[in-house]
Amino acid sequence: MNKEVLNTDILVVGAGIAGISTALEAAETGFNVILIEQSPFIGGRVTQLNQYFPKLCPPSCGLEINIKRLRENPLIKLYTLAEVKDITGQKGDFEVKIAIKPTYIKDNCQNIDEIIEKCPYERKNDFDFGLSNTKVIYKAHNNAYPDKYVLDRSSLTEEQLKFLSEAFPEAIDINQKEREIYVKAGSIIWASGWQPYDAKKLDNLGYGKFPNVLTNMELERLFASNGPYGGQPKFNGFNNGILKSVAFVQCAGSRDENHLEYCSSVCCLASIKQSQYIRQLYQDCEIHIYYIDIRTPGVFEEFYNTYTQDEKIYIHRGKVAKVIGNNNGLIVEAEDTLSGKLVQRAHDLVVLAVGMQPDTQKLKLLMPEVLDKNGFVRTDIDTGIIACGVCTRPKDVASTVQESTGAVMRAIHYIKGGN
Image (cartoon, rainbow, N blue to C red; front, side, top):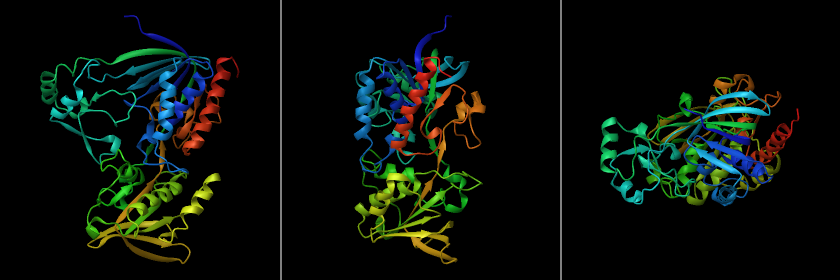
């Protein structure tokens, strides 16, 4: 069988904010772009946020414009559910093998909403980090692009799969097969994004033991208008579910040689931002932020100064040793490094500011030499693979967009034959 070969100037791997920005910059300069994303939708981690700083606006205020630009640009070809399998060639002349997974949903189905309502099987909603369920026929969120439904085959037994295919033949096609394409590109831009560090590895901080210990990204989903509670989250247990005291534990897994040895850059800002979510919903709630060093680089210093003037926000310099559960809530035990004393405080909710871990496992398998010891794509060597976004180092959205522009400039240089 002849293999399907596509030619393009630039292949962009990953369609989060970095990949989308890169594809748009390149295409609007006149270059052909193939943009691939392993998820069924584009937008990456930004789509999971409630708000992002400094303006505290929802992600839709920026993403909708960029998706419109992407959708209307004929020089960009988008493939979702697509994963790189192999990379051969060299700078200026790459060939990349890509596998595209099926959706198992027919494109011409007219009554998909009715079928979803009748579907008896559910799955954990990974878009909400498992805080909610969806049917096994799902779309990540209401504004997801592409506007396509997917069948999560991995959540079904063979018997359940057979039942669905027989019950809804107008919608489900279990015979769809994975297909392969080969992309010949002058340049590759890697923008695979990041994963939140696994809080289950932090045994001392109570994640997975106590229901009111959450990660910072879980809190984003709880307060998001398209999250499990429509932006009005419910909490377990104490004070009839009304939060009176919330602890933010900074550097949860970051700056720790046993976990992530680096600073994740945006966690301090994220916790200050999230404190405003809580203060707006629970006006009498105290916020306690436990930190090693508060880091709000560059223009975000003003953001920090503005929101930490709140009289209900208390900032404690000290690394949290452990989180303990008791009948009155959660106890945070920390060393106060200014006084040298070990302190304990009671809280209703503990939020772990887990670090940003680069999502570069695929690149590690294919080209391990391009990664540093922490899994970030190296920028000190020239392999022809250009990276941007959090896969080079932790950063905020604005810095990601700026780096994406630089990545396009390098890619164009390679295409034009530069070294």
